[in-house]
Image (tube, rainbow, N blue to C red; front, side, top):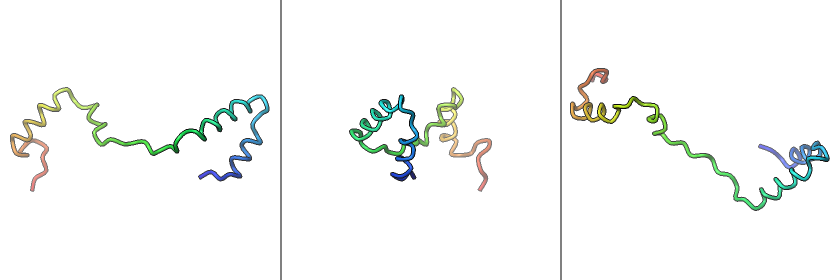
Length: 73
């Protein structure tokens, strides 16, 4: 986590020609709400599934879990 001292050191190291851009960024960050952690969706991996995934899942559900590759109890 950054401290104010770290940020002050970084600002002091900014070349004079880039100060207007840095000032604009800092001012904009005062107006915005604090950032939140990005959401992670558990279903994101299904976008890379085979085309017949829905059909195969229906077959598996119809068979009651008795399909090839199902864990044996």
